[in-house]
Image 1 (cartoon, rainbow, N blue to C red):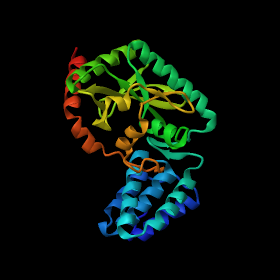
Image 2: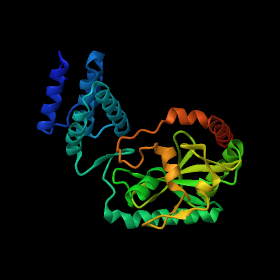
Image 3: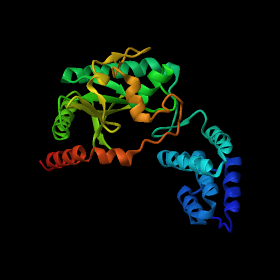
Image 4: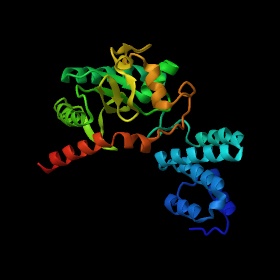
Amino acid sequence: MVEFSSLAQLRDYVEHCIASNNKDIDYEVLIQKISDFSSDFREEKLEIAIVLSFFLEKEGKRTSMKIDQLRRSYENSGNTIAFEPFIARCMVLIYPKILASHGFALPVTKEDHGDVTAGIVSIINKINEIGHEAFVNSGALLGIIRDKTYIPYDDDVDIGVILRANSAQSAASEWSRFKHHLEVKGLFQKVAWPGATYKIRNAGRLTVDLFPSWIENGLVYVFPHTFGELLREDLLPLAKSEPFGLPIPHRAESMLAINYGSGWTKPDPYYKFPWDSRLKKYRIFLDELKKLQSREESK
């Protein structure tokens, strides 16, 4: 491996590899060498690491975090005009793929819409057969309401499942039992991070995540974004979306404002959900669910 006496030399090396399409390079070693340079070069280090990740299509989720850090750094230094051209250049490196929510992937196209919708309908019907209402949630809901289509840079579909529970503890118990019903239906694939979401069979070529929700004292809880900020009437009765006819919250715009903030109407491919603060709110539910999952695994 080449040794680098300066960050500029390392950048030149990466650019040379890109120009010659040389992907026979050690990503981990280069990322470590970037990290070893002084923090005084924070923006430049982030730029090199991001470009390298795009070129080699490595660590999509971590790259999204670095992009968010770079954008905030640009904003703090008053250099916001540089952000969009930099990202545009990165996107060229992976075309026709995009950096989606879970990594580098082909975007959702118009040709996919029929398969995706049919897959969602089939899954929701099976959830209904188990005895629960379900609704399109988070990113899929955002696209349907804001853009009247699926978001092209999203690579999954989030579905909220309405439990009959009326507390965090009873919701954890019911959600644990619900997993068994999914297994019987042949839908369940695995428990996903942070232990409260279920990955199930795909809708078209998009993965599907299920999220628990319940109503407690007339207030709505939808893990992980809504924690009693909405009323029952904001969720129920479920409405039908345009143009796909999928079930959505009765006042979907209110839920999107909770989920994505007041700026939800403006597309932001690099939005980052504040997981840390939201997980703290759901600590009772998560702790109870973890206990139940541990008991099940010990049987």
